[in-house]
Image (cartoon, rainbow, N blue to C red):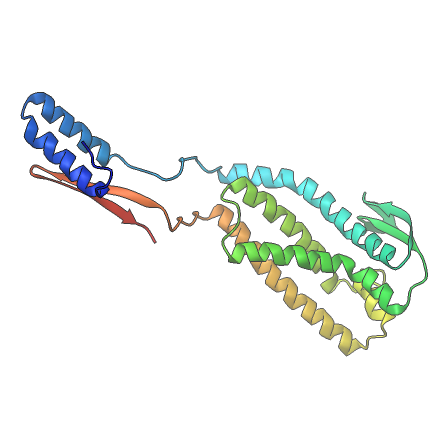
Length: 251
C-alpha cells in the first residue's frame, strides 16, 4: 500500500517493484505493461481545442466591424456631448448614422448649445481623441504584457475595436479641413503654422506607435500562439530492464 507520508516518487517506485517482483505470471506482466503504456501516453494541462482557420477569423472580424464602427461613432460623439455637458452645454442634436453635409460625408454629429471660452471649446473638440488614447493604451498594454484572451475570437474582437479607435484617432493627423475637430482647436487657440505642424507631428508619432501595437496584436491572431511557460509534457522511456520517466518543463 502507498504510504501517504512518503514521497510520491518513492510510492511509485515501490509499486513498480511490487508489480515486477511479486508476480511473474502472464497476468503480472500484463499489469506492468498497462502501467507503462499509461505513463507513456501524452499528457496535457489544457483541453486541446482546434483554433479557427484564417478564413473563419477573417469572417468573424468582418462581422465584428459593424458593432466596432457604431461603438466608435457613439464613443466619439458621446465624448463631445459629455464634455459639453460638463461645461453646462445643452445637447440639441446627436446623430450616429452617416449623412452628407455640404457635399462631404459625415459619420456622426453632436450639436450643443452653450457659452464656452477657448480652452473649454478646445477640450470639447479633443474629447474623442482622449477617449481613443485611453482605449489604445489599454489595448497596447495587453499586447505588451501578453494578457490578450487565449481564445482567437476574443483576440479578434478586441483587435477590431482597437483598429476602429485607431482610425478615429489617426484621421485628424492629415485632415486639414477647417471643419475637422483638431483643425478647429488649432484655429481657436491661434496656433502658428509651425506650432500646428509640431502638434500634428506629435499626434502622428502617437498614431504610429498605436498602429504598431494594433498590428502586433492582429499578427498574433494569425501567428502560432506562445506556449504557456507552465506547460509540462510527461516523457518517459521504456527499455527491457528499466522504466524511465520525468517531467519536461518548457520555457
